[in-house]
Image (tube, rainbow, N blue to C red; front, side, top):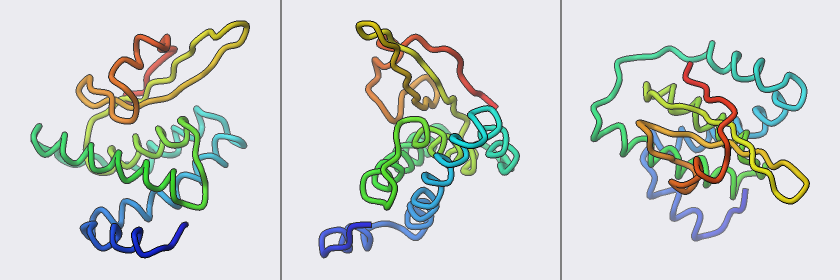
Amino acid sequence: MKFNRQNLDKWKELSWKERRILLSAVLLLPATALALRFLGFNTTQSLLSRLIQLRKEKPPEELQKVAASTTRIVQIAASYGFYRASCLPQSLCLWWLLKLQSIQCELFLGMQKEADTFKGHAWVEVSGHVLNDHEDVGSRYISMFDVRK
């Protein structure tokens, strides 16, 4: 991680819960990338699903606030942590952290043809709202499947 005065000030502004989520994301991003590489998507997603104990779902107004905060924290971890995660580990990490907080969400995997190559992408949605990409991501990528477990 990059340690400087500005980042330390930002750290101090986070609540204890946000700090815990940030530390979880910093550790989970490289672990997720390794699991994806050696175990594949299905096994990795299945392992993460087994670690979740769903509790009572949050009210809609709190749900959006917590989802936005968690998304921001995962993006911080991916940008400033010791591992620069691509969209799939970031989205799996975000999906799992949201599920841990009892937020129902979907993980989408999509494809896009660019010239003669295919490009894959992953993103997370809560109640039909895209969290970690632009709202139009579903129109730019053909969703191959979504994970609702």
